[in-house]
Length: 454
Image 1 (cartoon, rainbow, N blue to C red):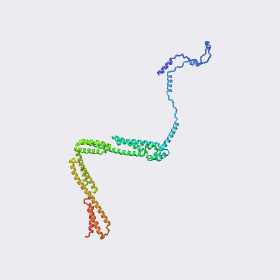
Image 2: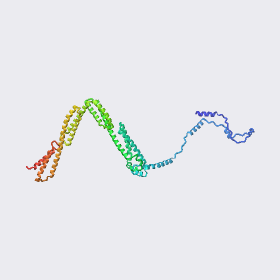
Image 3: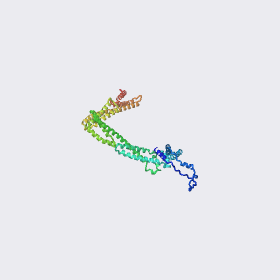
């Protein structure tokens, strides 16, 4: 508004005598003669109009003109319309022209031998995408398999094993992406691409698959060893805290037993694995700590544990042997229990004089019980075989004896009856077949008495 006010002020201050240029009118004027009153012509309407001053515009009119000019400058210029029909037509034709060759190449590279075999004979160049894909998968599989091999066979930490397992899975994915039928018929395809054989071969693929399987087994063993190491270390820490917090001798003995069991589990970790190498390092420290903390009591507790285990096995054997007779299978189970009890006592070292003496005493008792069980098992086996032989002879006698035997058959029948009685006498008392054998013996003796002349 300040600018408009200054413009309006200038317009008001302009002089009123406005010089009007004469119009270009061609008339013959005599310059030499002075003008006279008769010769002066009145001004024309156009000249009089120019001689008059323009009307002064108000402030509102000037503001309206400036705003109108500003709107004309800022008004956006309308763009010409887009021909969507023409653009759509071009897009359709572009898709058709590009889609047909792409579709032909896609169909030619489908993983079907009947398609690829025909294409390899007529237009082998169309199989170039398959070769490129095979080459990419095979090279990536080889690279990741080599990296996995280095990480798995020579690990320095569990993180190496995890990364190696990840790379192994990626390599196996690339190997699985190779078309099986294409590899199987490699000889047919290779004659058209002789230059490609140095980059890929079925033998190399098979070797890679075998190596991947071996590495997978190695990872499985390493993970199992890591699990055993984790459990052994956990049990060791728990037993150590249990021993420190124990208040009674019984609690201390239980903690020492668990402590020793954890150390024994640590020794079972395979030494060829990364976990085994770590376990060997920990084992030295754990055994030294165990010896320094527990001392001689550890050996005594181990002896007590062995003697306790031996007595438990002997108790089970004695309970299983109650209420005879038993079958041969049952006697064999009882025999194994006594044998296990003796094996526990044999593990007690001679350095522990008191424990070794007690173990020798118990071992003598258990060996005597073991000998009795073996004798009864063998007696059961002999009695069962004797009864079976006797029953077979009885069946033969019944089958070979006529309904009305003659006097000539009597001696043969008497001889066979005596043989049956002799077999039944072999059945020992205290066996499962003794009562049945005695019943058959009484019947055979009665028949023998009937046939023997008085």
